[in-house]
Image 1 (spheres, rainbow, N blue to C red):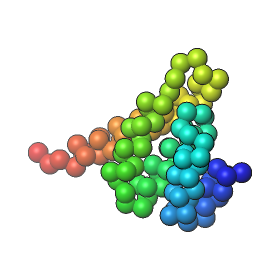
Image 2: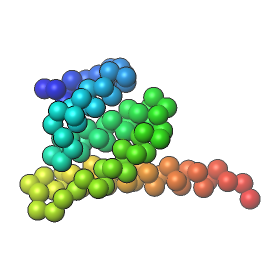
Image 3: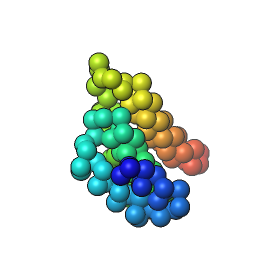
Image 4: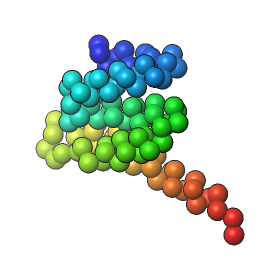
Length: 101
């Protein structure tokens, strides 16, 4: 229910409120479960849309480090971690594409 509120706010484009809900979720329930991993990912996306690029990059980088072996939710966690790593790589690629030779 708590996490779902953040999803709804994100859909309604209430980004500041959505970010606060995802941050509160992480403080309350932690980052190690599957929903916590998704919350980090969604928080990073909200931060990026709000122009908080450094915070977003930090959270996207954190996502990859949250995966543990032998977890019940390994597949789901790996899915969101790989999305985060792809977004980081995509940002780097865009930086290099903008270089004029």
